[in-house]
Length: 610
Image (tube, rainbow, N blue to C red; front, side, top):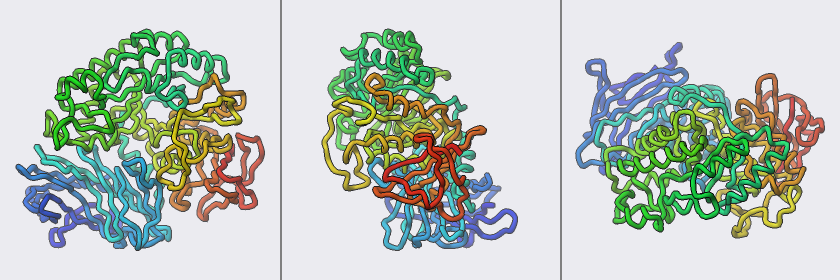
């Protein structure tokens, strides 16, 4: 139960049955003059007050095990609201210590090249910042705390731990033009994985009605931007001639079909009309899919050269850019009409699967000057995505590839839950750790997408160029993993296929099926039948990199056991985790005992039927 203690000026959460105090939080508002604490009192049934001149109202609702605090902030003319937050002292009441190495924190970071996963806290650690949610777990059995977004806000969320306090809130970094509502959910429990599942169930009220997850083929990881219609024809024929023919229903042309960013005419490697492309895919027996990056426009496109007024303007003047492309202004009605008409044309051409890419947080953050300055960044993106949804219809399938959750929940059918995969151990290692932290989303927010299933290696193809041109470099920094180190071996790629299978979501193959041998095709075939729900990484808060993923799908149960290390490792099950004692390995057919007497090879996985 949530109440406001007017004397102490804090929100208090008390156990519903015992009345025991669980946590206290100070409500704070930050502007250019600094941080201000809320002074509030109950008036006419509402909690209202001020913080540094900002007028604030509080609303409390209970959704066990979560208490939801909604903070409503009134605008102030010519004053920017930097942050609004709850500040919870660590190590008090039921909040885990934030200075102890026995406390672990789950990070959902918004940037690619930063640490993700579950990290250990401690006195000498730098502050950690998570997005959307975080979980704090005390290894000594003193419980767990989850703090996450309580509703879909218009601004970026943050969850910051600095050793002293947990700051959970939002960072508008803008002048408000209307009352804004920022909701946070905080829950306690003994099991952090169960808390994540319960948080997913709570957020499901904002989700779109779920479609079944899909399986198909996508051009990107093998062909990159070099794909052509001749390549597509070759791959469709190869799929139909393989044992994957009855497993892959969708065929997606990824980046490489268009003339340039924002110049959406098919290039010279494809038929001139969208309908001609979609018809060939339909005639081959697949559902047509297509990739697009609708937020960006090239300087060399007609729009980029002659209609720079349709772009977000940078503070220093001229269009704001994300890399080289400029960022279209999705608050401009003319831009939204263009976006709508383009996607409607794809729908009419026959495309029913749409992969939306490059609507990244770094681009969204570059607010600059827009046609309409009254909305927050996530509200702008949500509105643009709704325009796309209306254009393609409710029966089309949309994959969100990199768009922040706050702006895409309820609109898209599926969401990528990791960085791009490539056939390198560095990507497998990085993406797998990230994926483990997002499995709770599957079936709650949408279908989850682990990026592509890839298996090409020296054992599965004699292709002399298995990857497009890249700069060779060692993998010396775990967070700077992009195409680093040697290309992955067959055994390492079987680890990746094990992860893809245990995700229980989308399965899109992205090798050249025409160039794989029987060994490669056979390995991909083991992804089927697919699981209908995600596995649980049962040791995620015990091992920094979870080794044991347990899945139950109908009457079927499977256990994935991983060795993420660069040296042989015995199978050591952490105390308190109950796992099947043995199983039949899908990859080798061998009977494997789940015990310390079984030593796993470096960078390997068992996929056990148990």
